[in-house]
Structure formats: C-alpha cells, structure tokens
Amino acid sequence: MRMKIKIAGHRFDAVFEDDKSPASCDAFRAVMPFESQVVHVRWSGEGMWIPLGDMDFEVGHEDATAYPAPGQILLYPKGKSETEILIAYGSVQFASKAGTLAGNHFATITSDLEQLRKIGVATLWEGAKPILFEI
Image (cartoon, rainbow, N blue to C red):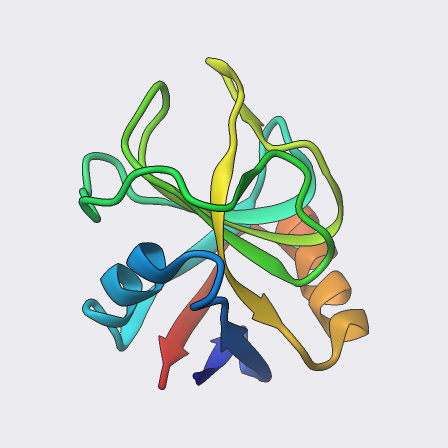
C-alpha cells in the first residue's frame, strides 16, 4: 500500500512495509492522516524524528533495526525511550539518551531522496518542519 508524505511543502511517495512489519503498518494506518512536526535527531546522525511521548501504538518489535537506510521510516514503540518515528535521510545509528534503539521499519520513502536530505539538513539549521502522512 502506498502513502504520501508532505514535509515542509514537499511531497514524497512512500510504501508501507506490510510484509515485514504488518502490525506496525496497521497501527500507523489507524491514526492517519497523521500530522505533526519533524525535528532533527539528537543522537542518531542524519535523521529526523517525531517525538510521541507516551503514545502507545500497542505493537511489539518487528523487523526492528538500529541502522536504517536513507528513506526508511521506523516506529519505535514504547520501551526504554519514548515512542517516536524516525526518518533516515543519511547515515543513522538509531539512539537515544538511553542508548542504541531498534525501531520497526514500517515504511520507505521511494521518491526524491535528494530533496529529503535537503529537508533533513534544514531541520538541523532551521528547526522543526511540518509533516503530514496520508493515504
């Protein structure tokens, strides 16, 4: 299944990774359209994240990784850190103040990774950007 992601006015195509993370995909689809802000990661390298605090998607770990490739989107369910979504735009080792994390790879951006990188760098230097996920 496909989705559209809009970050700072730019649209990206993405696919859900239903074969790898079916529970995470279903849980995220249930809250769509999902609108928030994305900020630059603190410990993880070249990525953006959406802190979600105590939000509980009620999923466990599936296809979890600490090293997402550019364009991969991870959902970190409740655990040793807060719930969050991470979007890799470059080299990432997913981490928090609690140490290395492994998030569920539930979606992948399939278009315009060069623009994703530009937006990622802009979040570092300019701050938060609006983000919208929709089917």
